[in-house]
Image (tube, rainbow, N blue to C red; front, top):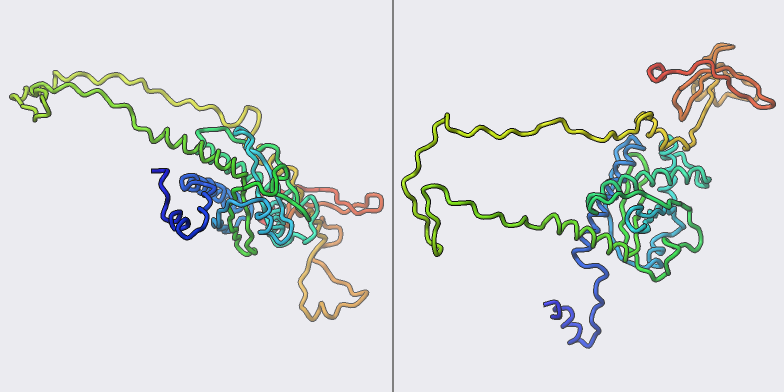
Length: 367
């Protein structure tokens, strides 16, 4: 049946045209890759929601198989690209392609901001923060993909990122005409401008992923081996030639005292390997994930409230009275959160703060 022409092919030949080109992916492969795209979409939703602390909606958009050149045409300016490989699975290359605005939003959230405070001309620090955020998305997605791929232990390796300018390609080692598989998601974070993210792998690698998933699903769907027929019960003769079995008079039911005792079952507590190595606490590993992310440290001398008319009346030499007493400790804030108090000192020609009190979490929130 595979050698027969479809109606579209017959119509093309009768019309004097060429046969349509075969699709890049079979319907079965496309279905599997749509499921893979859903895994990445779910990971984005979970990670971004955790970072923003707001409602996040990630919607799957179009899925394409196009050349690198055609992919580039989807962006009016150089995007931010996070690249990695599937460690533990043939080092298949993977790329997250994000609009510059979206990358800056993600970076500001990683640095404890609201998502609206990133400057237009952000430096390397911001894009390092964006890379860390996308790295967490990939790590979460790889954990979910492990089951689809037959339990492969996947880890993001060979990670790098760059804000692309001028001539760029998703995968620099591949040619301009090399086909890619890509899936787009639209990310909406409460109170922020939506942005899009593309996840992409070379088309040949996408087919490899689909092939492995097909193999795993085929193994799970295989029917169990046929069980041997149970022996005929006492009083029932086996049918011959497909006839209906004949029944003799039923045997007497066994008395309760004659019942066989239940077999002994070996029951013992399950033993699991500890998830955290000895000598390290679970909290330490989480902190390590963001230990190199910079934060804003602000020292607040004091504050007050004024009417608009008072502000408009200010002139050179005006004095504004603050709510702090002379000699009182100043507040030290990290990303707007009060964490300590201190006294102002002079270090060479710069001001500094000597910490006099570090607030615990309960006391900080109370303030």
